[in-house]
Length: 626
Image (cartoon, rainbow, N blue to C red; front, side, top):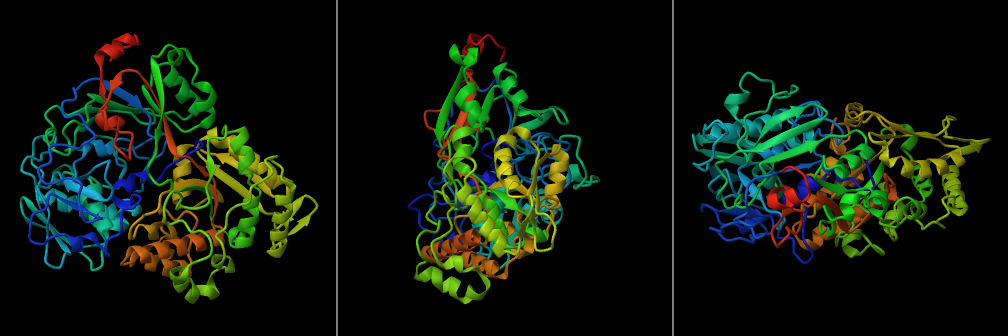
């Protein structure tokens, strides 16, 4: 874990975003699409950027040469993945630590674009047709679509994939797919999916753009939820080649990939080999990059970026570094209280603990003033609450007044700015006052809970690079009599403990769905609070919040959706389930100067893995092999 961590960026392009100035359409963009007509794509906002017959995505070079390699480490994780290790090649189940890069090996019915939000285009499906009630979607399979052994992708494979993921997949994927009422193969090459009433476009796009297509024949006789130690038969641009659990995994480009000249693939995935390396120690990972063992790195540690990029390969130009604008809404990174534990059940106690975090000191002394303080999961969006609640927000909040904090009806909570000393006595006094109001008392050097037990906090982590940030926080907690500790465990134990909610506090970062999407229930809904592996790390189980979630998901206009999200933001901040940390508006990348790229960068991604290519002359100039 470093200055910044992202667990949910994967959902953003086709599940979670709206650009500034793009209006939310009435209830569901499916209502905007014609029926009984084959469509080349679907959009959550009604209009697709690209017309039928488009040749390729705008941000690629269709003539990009193939070849070369890239060696990197993943900047984000999904489902059962860990940054530090892997022990299975199935990332779509709860068990184990899944390998990075597995989506490279699978095709999906449709494909999203990295310069367009909430849109997907036909890919392994030739088109999509909506029924008159817009609840059934029919996908004829692209006749060119094949698995790597040459066998065709059939409707049976799609049915197997969706039902298997729905019934046996990771909870955070399965919960979306449970909105499928039925899925059936109409013939060998046509699949029909019927959705439950009121299913949102987000679920449609999860199904068509987010789910891999597995080979039913290959999986026959294999247990889907078991640990997987062989590369499954795929249908995407890459196949699994060499790997060593916990160390590295290599993907080789499929030379006869069926989709190489497809409009959604043309000019993409140009490297002959993509390799992910795993390092349990962040310093070792950085040294590997300096020595040319890793060729591309996204930097998340401000100290490294500020002072460590001065090694010889930087100075002589063999390694380049860039700061790229990040136009994805930043979401919120925070320490999550596990409110399933009685000691964190009182919002006053949670607020008091948060007051002892001195962001200003940490930013100045550890993070080189690289970040801004976060206050909300809705940073950089129009849905962040501000000022007093408006009439539309009050219409949602007033019926819940008896069951939500009074603080939800005033200006939303923003953590007070400290004096930057790292030992702000005024904030410590405020914290002690809140602890006292909650029934705690300071006895000698121990802060006692109302039960008489000393308040203790274990911060759980799987990487010690975040230790300085924690230590500054822990120092203030201990000065007020709290038994605070920082515990780093190995990646497998961390994944298991977080999955089973066996922690006091841990760090995560989520980007909110920015149009009606049931996914938000996985983070804040009572129904997910007790589901192992869910995103509801804080254990939020609040009927009032459930009611606001209903208002978000059922919003029919932009104004209704905005008001419901702002009401949610107010209540979450008033309840103090989280101690928000920081964000920044750029992404830091560094790479050995082996590569070229298109003139246009995809708006919502770096585009490195799927749009860059190797220049052999540049590889030779750095004195390395390609």
